[in-house]
Image 1 (cartoon, helix red, strand yellow):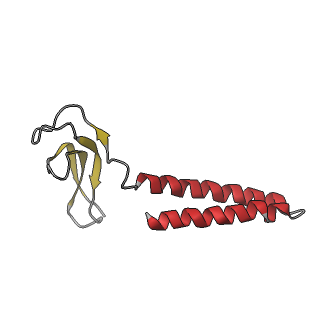
Image 2: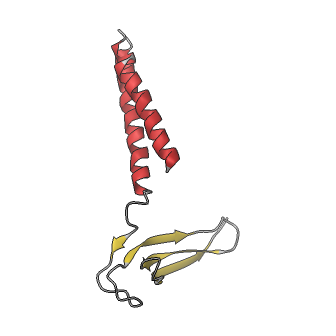
Image 3: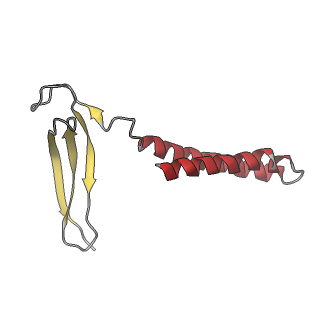
Length: 119
């Protein structure tokens, strides 16, 4: 996540330079402004990725009901995918994983599909 934040800051600095400095040069200013807008858009995508990886945001979606193990309303679920290297012969798995708090330790998976990794 730190690398993504650094990339966002570098892209923002380059975009500002392109728009503010190169954009003021006659006959090439429109190129600088256009490139600056593209750089800002790429930086925005990096920022969205960094926000998605933020440890501050909770994982998954809240689930109605109580945890069967601890009785609290702290269940969260999301889709999960685990895959192996192609040609390894080991299965790849995806499904919906439901987790409680780390203190509780409750975890379950449903709608699990398995297939063999192919070359």
